[in-house]
Image: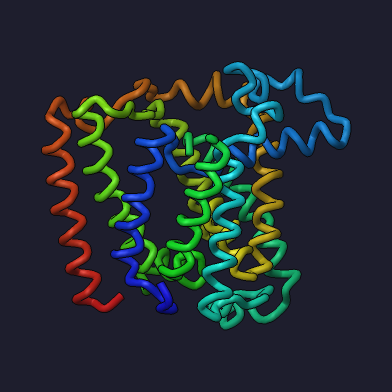
Length: 134
Length: 174
């Protein structure tokens, strides 16, 4: 536990056991991307966009709509944020960084350039993940 | 209670992800460039262990699987888009959140982008539902069902392939 890094095979196997227990105890498989859809609906509603006419947000009894929050998966995501923060702080790995090391070596230190690419990468990645059913 | 289980599972999962260093941009892009296979070691170990555990529980009638629909069109187009986006961002949705927890602020811009991507998908959904998702659609289908064989045969063969990959990773020191 106190070691700074764990063997990735061991950590992966433990994550597998964790998911088995989660499915057994609470019937929940691990996932995060659906919460981005539900949160997008919450944000749209908060800026005055009516999501009740959107097929995706309303089908399957509003499973993907704003009304589905808060739920298990939203809390799972908060947990990941918290768990990663605590683990990073306790092992001295926490570092505020705007540009990753590998990126800096190839593309330089400009945080705006990195931020713009990260933003559009995120747009494409989540659109693709939802289309593929992830 | 369900919310509490979500939070606790997330915290423990976040600790595992952080300790294995899989939240790093360098590790994720390193895997795509085949120079650091840490992500694959973590993911494949996790898949093998959970496949065995979940199918055991299923065989004993203790759980139900949650199988997603198979659509060749949606998974080919969606998977390719996901790959391009993942390569640009360097984090997947879950690890972007974890990376932010580690202090990697570039993940924050990725999370904002993912929220916009989710909103755009909701707008594009009627088109996808009628034009893309029906292409090569087979409904809820598992690999053992598609092959018409016992699921343990698929799990054993998959495990052998994964172990061979692990052997190769260690031999090549990646």
